[in-house]
Image (cartoon, rainbow, N blue to C red):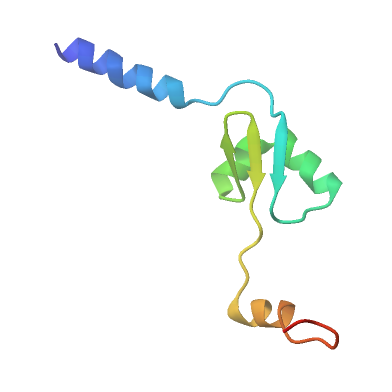
Length: 83
C-alpha cells in the first residue's frame, strides 16, 4: 500500500515536470530580443531566480519589481497624458 502511494506521488511529480521546447513567450517585462533569447536558452535559471515562470511550452518573463519611488517615477503625470 505504501508502495502504491509512493508511485502515485512520483507520477504526480513527473506530470508536473516541464519537458520539450518553448514554443511561446509572454514578455511582461518588455525585455529586448537579446535578453529574451538569453532567457529562453537559460530558462531554468530564470525560473529558479523568480524572473520567469514556465507552464508547459510557454515561458512568461516577469517585469522587474519596482520600488515605490521607481514606480512613481515611471507613472508620474506627464503633459499630454490622460492622468
